[in-house]
Length: 191
Image (tube, rainbow, N blue to C red):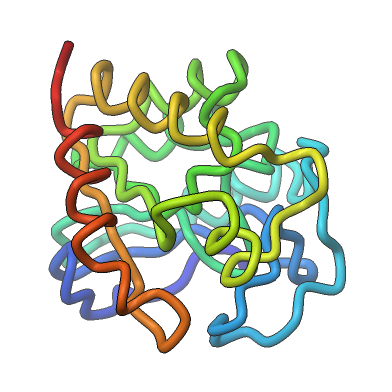
């Protein structure tokens, strides 16, 4: 089942979730604090995990929604789903804002940016002020570069309809709170 909820979200209110990964945990990170455990399939390859026909079928079976928002999240990084844009467009039929909870790792990619611009509210993650802490906490795929990711976040921030930056503070990064706040302020500049 790729559609779940609605669930209460402290960030978004009452949220109907869509998990476009849902077959197993596929992520570009292997975060030390992930509630889903270790990442078995660490990847940056975008592909279709759940066919468009299945997305349509599950959304078509919903006749009434008591939710504030429809949110893409679930068993991994939702921007890995190559049909994110299609799914966001199809979910619009409910007339609710569309959100995504993302680790920000693929923001520098043009195809990901194109999909993200179809989403009303982007909740982007940033857990580190520099490459060293990033690698320690998020344990990214080897091809993800911290500086490129930050530039991608800045670009998405400029173009997004609504943007939130989320930071998870753990033992390994809490002493860098001021540096992380400085980086968040830098990201929040529109130009």
